[in-house]
Length: 359
Ligand code: SF4
Image (cartoon, rainbow, N blue to C red):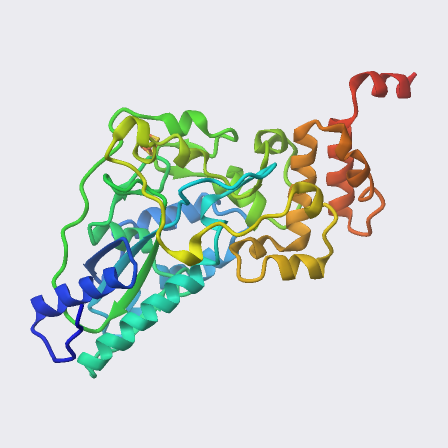
């Protein structure tokens, strides 16, 4: 496709931007007015409930999240893009990891593409200003994505596209340009409540309400302290993040809803990286962790968090061959790891052995 660098009227410019975004590899693209998100009040109420747990940064940046103009003065339009992230095949591992974290860090992938888009727009419209937002520049991306027609809210709080499911990243490019806006997406869950019933920790406290403090994604990625006891067994084999509420969703399941289904990503940088086995993680030094997960979203958990999670997963696997590796942490200098190891060891110790020990 030839990209003509001449100033364009509004409709043509909007269409041109969308086509260019698709050529950059985005699966979904729409345009919304850069306005205060319609669910701003719900977001503030969610924070007031304490559902964000220890994610203080959400509170600190709330004013930015609900007001795009604070991020880009004179913002008029939000070009909202979606990038599929689920792989065609899940890699074989002896634990689970959220699909979004299998490839390279999406922040880098989406940011680079949106910066290319912004640079090209500015070569056509030199007066245009823009700002790329991928989590780090906090906009309520999902609200803008809904307004731009990319999807509607599911009861699992994910944005769902009727034809694509919910396995896609959202990125936003705020622009000072007036563009043509899409209509908000229509759709809904109907009477389905599969995700609410499937969540092992009960984090979906009611439809459209996620208590992050109970969510496996929060517990394994954001929480820096010990994982509360009641959630350790329900975490099962999830080492980093969780996809349960998305995996059970009919809009992500090809068999039920052909051709309404999540499609595998075409983005080379989002293809699954080679992953270490659980035993390797339990033996990994901090520097090996930094090397292994460089450029991956997994690094957000940090070495300490990932090893803590690996100990919980080890306990839940009930595999006695893991005991020697777990025992090594019983005398670790970090109390968090000592305590997680003691918990795991109890799970790995056959009841008969515990009984003999207590006699
Ligand atoms: S699993 Fe059912 S209730 Fe949950 S988000 Fe999907 S369609 Fe909605």
